[in-house]
Structure formats: C-alpha cells, structure tokens
Length: 289
Image (cartoon, rainbow, N blue to C red; front, side, top):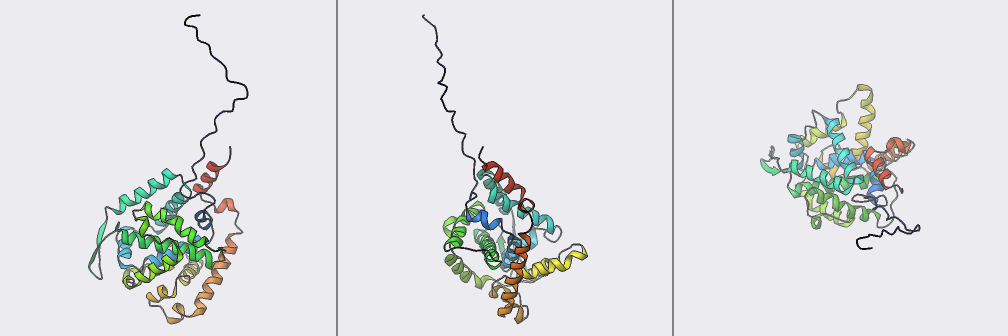
C-alpha cells in the first residue's frame, strides 16, 4: 500500500559490532617501559636520577628555587611518582594532559643560578632534555645493576620508547637520545657543563637524611647510599667525596650487590601491593570483556 513502511528484522545470526579497542596509552603492556617501570629497582633509579640531575647547575637552581623540596619532600616525591605512573600506564589523553600541565608550569618559571649569575628558564628544552636523560639513564642502570635481564636491543628499545615521554614536556624528538650509544655521547658532551654547586651538595645530604622518624633513618640512609653508588664514577667524583667512594671498583661492586639484594627482597612483596593504582586501572581497562 502507498505509504506503508516495511521493517525487516535482522537475521538472527547477525553479529553486533565489536567494541572499540581499549586505549593502551603511550606504550602498552608489551613495552619495555611497562616492564622497567614496574620493576622494584625503580626506587633506586628514582633516587639516582635526582642525584644525577642535580649536577647541572641550572637544573639544580630550578629545583632549589621552585620545587619546594625542602618544605614538602614527600609530597614532591608522590607528585613525581604520580606523573610517571600516568604517562606510563594512563590513557593517551591523560598522558598528554599531564605533560601539558608540566609544560605550563615550567613555562612560567625563570631564575638566576646564584654561583655563576647565569639566567635560566625552567622550560628551556636544553635543561628539560638533561632531566629526561638523567632519568631514563638512571631507571635503565638501576634495572640492569640490580639484576634485571636485558636481551640485545632491549635497552635501545626502552630509550626509543622514552623519546615520546620527552616530547610530552616540550623536547623535540629528534634531539632526544634514542639508543645507548646516543645517550653515552650525550653525557660526554654535557660533562663540561656539570658540577656540584653548593645547592647540589646540600641536596645530596638532604636526600641522604630527609625529615622522617628517627627509627627509619638508618634504612633510608642505606637506600640513598646505594643509589649514590649506582651513579657513574664521573658523576660521583663531581660531588667531591673521598676517593674510595668515587673511583674504587669496590664501590661499584658493593652498590650492585646491595641493589640486587633489595630488588630480590621487594619481589617477595605481592604484586597487588606493589602496583600503583594507575597500573591497576590500565590492566582492568585492557582486560578482554
């Protein structure tokens, strides 16, 4: 009939469209980033990164003048850990938003390094690149020195993945070391700029003995000392400590053995207790329905 509309029911065998795939974030569960950033050695890697980063006078001046680490060290530590977890395990949108927030803060800050009188901008890509390189080198070194196994090419794969992390905070990807050879060349080039200022030495002693209950201080001092021992010899030497702590091969051996012991102990802690909330959310997001 004119005007009559016939509705045809879909066949009973019709398959509903598949839901869109879950967002794995910037890296995904099969990445080297997920593997290394979930390892217990990250605790030592994070402390090593702080000690290495402090050797650039302008980067250290930025930390001293704007981070408030002395007034709220544990708050700053937690914020850094949350940022790292977000860009590692969060959705792509969350990671990009976290990076944009960091850039917005950095772009507002500038100062003068007190010993040399050199002006600096916290968001200067040269300084941000240094912070990034010191960080990824420390995570990789701690993983390896504490007993984490890497097959040929896996360290380079991790560094190549982390170029994305550097780009989030405003560093041009083409300027970021993406292999161990590139990273080694980068540190060789930067060494003339590096030295332990009075602020860097003060940060070292603060990291060794931050405000905390007295019974916990010996264990923390041991942890921070191991992290210092994981630094390359040239970096330890910059701090001007006695020769035996900076150049003697025994210091390297002791730090490595202590790191392996700590990592072995922490692997005994149930994974559910070691996982960050953001990682748990990522695993749930990516779990097949």
